[in-house]
Image 1 (cartoon, rainbow, N blue to C red):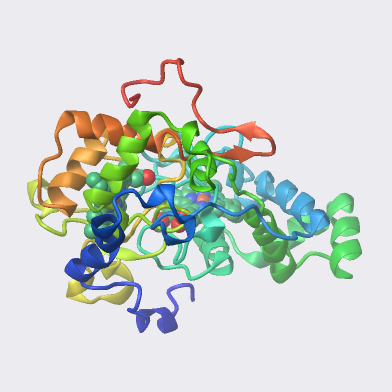
Image 2: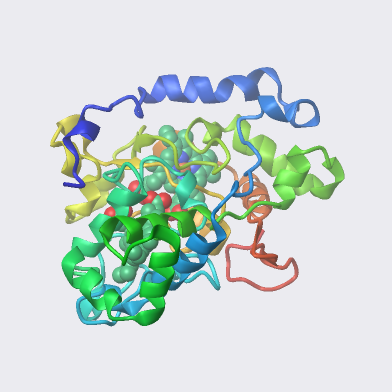
Length: 347
Ligand code: HEC
Ligand code: HEC
């Protein structure tokens, strides 16, 4: 049911790549230094804090997010794969699902994901409701159904009290999803150095970071990674200029991307463009976790999405820019402290 037919018809997310590249590049071509002028005209936008959330629902949703009773064998909660004390995901190539079996795609961060549309690598979920239904029924994840979850949670007196107080009735599928969705909306990371820069504090970025941002625009990364999440809002083929998958001995089902949803040959290897907001914190990269470092991921992007090579120095500058993107969650800075070693993805 989450492979909703309605969505199959919605192809407006996907523009021809040359058009997208052009549209995305326009601001950079004509105004290389726009950042010093009008933030409204920037291809990337400040991420706005979560607006007027219901605190009681957020608290309830947070509890649900951490509750292992969701999974068939009571072993997994949402937080098992989406660790909110670190990057909102984990650092495995593939998270372990039920029975400790690895999943078939890399886990994206839950932070800021309520601002992505559609959801999932192949864009098969239109909203949080569909996304949660998918996790519940997925044989690799919770491997269960709503009646089982509702019956388990209804035995908990605390839950009964909270659900009655907020919704006037005991937990059911809709109220559980509503509370989880409200909590997901609270997982926003505003206040990054980059956002402060966009808001006019031009000295907050180093020359190297500013240079990285200009390169990110002028190379055309913004054609696909744009908006407040620096991605997360369109579907694009992985391999616009060259066939990324031809070097593979075997193509997995997950590698087919959007084709698995629509069955249309043109959708083979089409994926939801990921958000780069927290990308410095979430190695390894790509739906298949095949790039271990940011450097590797950017070189792949250059070759397959832009059809060119990017000199090492420019790659370093772009990485420095990407380090300015993580903001804060509950007053905790998600940005990696400059000066601390963090593997080989450091600028
Ligand atoms: C066993 C690991 C695992 C568990 C448990 C899990 N997730 Fe995920 N989550 C993933 C993976 C893997 C994906 C990507 C799936 C895909 O794209 O096909 C994902 C995708 C998502 C997304 C979409 C992100 C985006 O930008 O598209 C959200 C939101 C999310 N999960 C929230 C949750 C919530 C809420 C729960 C609990 C109800 C949960 N997850 C449980 C592994 C997990
Ligand atoms: C034509 C669209 C397009 C362009 C241009 C593009 N990207 Fe991407 N980017 C994608 C898509 C699609 C993916 C997801 C590929 C996958 O895993 O299947 C992606 C993934 C990434 C990732 C990995 C993110 C993650 O969480 O796994 C990084 C990093 C990245 N891009 C950076 C860049 C940079 C830097 C540039 C410019 C040099 C760029 N991209 C240009 C579409 C694009």
